[in-house]
Length: 146
Image (cartoon, rainbow, N blue to C red; front, side):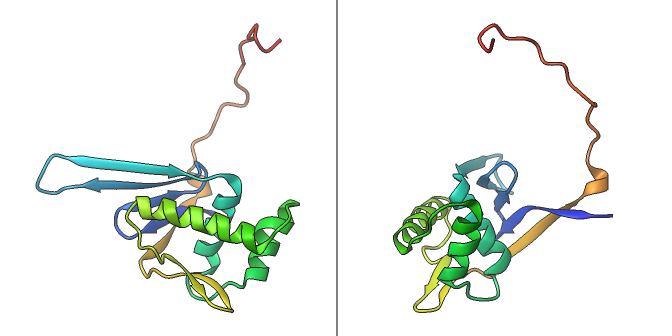
């Protein structure tokens, strides 16, 4: 039976859903009947960078050159220090919106980057438990698409 990475739990309230490219915070109070929900979405490069750091940078520093290769070059994009800084800066701003600390992704000067947060847990699902989909769903013709 195979397992596939669904996402990550960050702390008790923040969920990273890889397939839907979103990070969301779901806060509920045990004493009230209130609930708060906040969600942010990622572009493709930001998603790859965040996911790579969560998968590989929780226990070790990831060198800038490794990020260039895995995030940009393997996807036929041109890396640069400025582009890496820009994506990380925008990513950190989004993470702060959900209440994560400013240094969630930490720059280790001269060495690279790592996740600077202890409570990050990968979440997997079992492939055999996925619902089966019909073989083919008929699509209706739309006059606008013809």
